[in-house]
Amino acid sequence: MADYDGIIIGAGHNGLILQAYLGKAGLKTLCIERRHVAGGGLSTLEDPRHPGFLHNTHAFFQRAITTMPWYAELELARHGAHYIEPELNVALLTSDGRALEWWTDVERTVASFGEFSARDADTLRRWQHEFVPIVRDILVPESRSIPLPPDERRAALQKSAAGRRLLEVSALSPLEFVHREFEHPTVKAGLLFFNGLREVDLRIKGFGHHIAALLASPAKAQMSRGGSAALARALEAAVREAGGDIMLTTEPARIVVENGRAIGVKTAEGELIRAKQFVASSLNPTQTFVDLLDKALVPRAIREQIERFQYNLLAPLFALHLNLTEPPRYAAASNRPELAKAFMVIMGLDHVDQFLDIVRHHEAGTIPPTVMWGACPTLFDPSQAPPGRHTAFMWEKLPYRLNGNPASWDSARREHGKVMLQLWRRHAPNLADAVIDVFTRSPLDVERELPNMREGDLLVGAFTNDQVGFDRPFRGAGDYRTHIPQLYLCGSSSHPGGNITGLPGYNAAQVILSDLGVRTEATA
Ligand SMILES: Cc1cc2nc3c(=O)[nH]c(=O)nc-3n(C[C@H](O)[C@H](O)[C@H](O)COP(=O)(O)OP(=O)(O)OC[C@H]3O[C@@H](n4cnc5c(N)ncnc54)[C@H](O)[C@@H]3O)c2cc1C
Image (cartoon, rainbow, N blue to C red; front, side, top):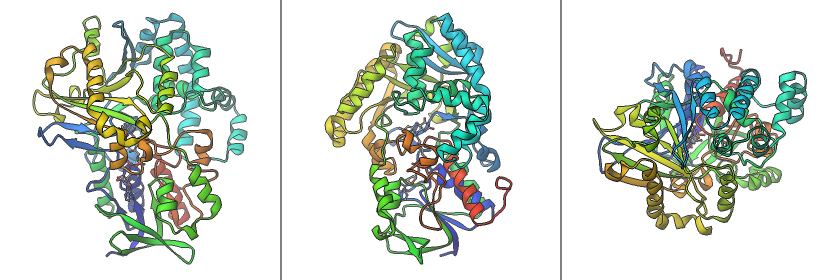
């Protein structure tokens, strides 16, 4: 066994990004992964019954990947990654055959909103315009650095007009923001849907800026050519080029601490792998502090914080995947031919009040009327199916504890897939004859595959006010360091949170390199 400088637990994209940076800085590292494949949520599976049909079973819509600092710095395009950003980025199909559209060109988005409400179109343009500098100068830099304690952050923001405006807008809840600013129920629903994608509880104050920030962000949804796993493969290539090792199908049993410092990992097979300089965990706080550390090493105050750690009620997703002879042909496209090339398609959502209904169902563990969204990847990347064939999927937010028990999903899955297909056919009647194969995945399947996504929470920890920024995963723990010297956090439970952003791994790399006194371009 090589002599490692550092060990990373979990080969999701955050772990791999951290590893690639440390390798580039000259450190010898090992990543330990429990699955047979690296990439975590960057997962693309081939249908075992129908070779050549590829399905992205976790992350598919990846926001602004090509603008992330690590994408260029780790030379991922050279390592084989390639991203596609369709122009008609999102289309919400209403039950009366209309479509609310988000384009990469904001003027086309404004024009589409204007078909629903001229006033809302003006409001959209105004917020988009006002938030461009706030996103560029405050929110993007914040996401790429160690968060400040809330008081210090507030004091820093108070010093500029843009900062004061951000504080004022974020004091609202997303729901208050849309009700105050917009008038049309479908426009409100569409805007909240994006916010909902971030899984923030729409009723919570402190997140009122999210919608304006998403409107102003130059970063739209992108997809990875060859499937999401192609990004994982590029990251693995970057890791290996920098001398990193990845050990698959290996579970850690313990993070080993000697003389108060993290010095390695003991595997489930009983092997001790030593790390001279650090151990970094990309897992959730329960796994890191409860499952992998001796109880005596975790002070009671921290244990209590971990016990209080919350997972997102609204994050769990149910997925319906199809193999097709032709792409879904939406009835609404007869009036709007551009819909034939819509990337993300949303169905079942007409009115803002549906959100509260969805929250109520999640709290009760019951299934709400279907609101779903998805894509037909092969419209933009034919390599994901055999020639002339297609794949498509829809996701729906559904409760993890169905009828009070997650195990209920194993018997309810098939029937629920049929309900989703029914709605899909209503909008795309050609699906009645085009389906070659169908499979579904429940929130319980997500947790089984990636146990760090506890309770099916794909963001690995709720976005509530006491679990963001400096306080993610818990109060004061936002700087990626832990109470144990040489033990770090680097996954989605840390700032700025889940989704394919790579920023927890990127930020953790800067912290570790700085603690080790290694200077790089990013830390200089
Ligand atoms: C159905 C679904 C759809 C999604 N859609 C999107 C989307 O469209 N866009 C988007 O940006 N995000 C999406 N996400 C979320 C995204 O996949 C995650 O937020 C992201 O993968 C988190 O990255 P990570 O590196 O922190 O963790 P992960 O990707 O989860 O990686 C963690 C790694 O740790 C490993 N691991 C877990 N436990 C152990 C252990 N005990 N020992 C060793 N290894 C372990 C796992 O196997 C995994 O490889 C989706 C997720 C799901 C489930």
